[in-house]
Image (cartoon, helix red, strand yellow):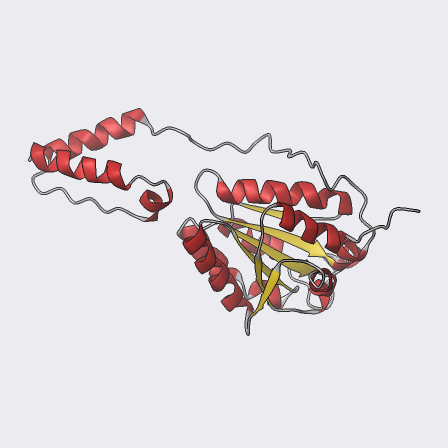
Length: 237
């Protein structure tokens, strides 16, 4: 019996399942319909929202509570652009987010097609990385890379733009063992010693030091180290 082929959209959903996705926050639309159709037989639960911005904020909240990337699924054009505020929020607050946007078919890209928007270009300044997928075989690799980028270093949002003809086409590629290709992606694993020494000097010289700690302390689980720094700086003064 011949092996049943799957679509790019089904490969996308299977790739999300392999990365531990349990919920998707989304609002349907034409360009993303193949992806929503692929969700019907998936264990992933769709949380239907009333506005795309709400999907981004809900996924952001899910990520903050669970520590796992929140996943957003919306359609092209206004559906995609409505997520911008939520994407910027997650970027500013170091929240891992995966934003899946439907897009017009690849032959129509750049031709002002119906509900086409350059969401790749629009979101470039406010994401850790953006992808525009043009071949079905790239889907598993891109999904794997997206979760890696969103979770590592300083967490943040990654956007994947998915043309409708790609998600509708038969999948051709390796679904089980995608290999990441991120030669330029590096993130610091140790603090800058010179900056730390400078901070210590300033604390030692200050009369009333004020430590303004942000979300980075929480996500890096550095609360005890922060308390120790506070106690030490208090003794110094």
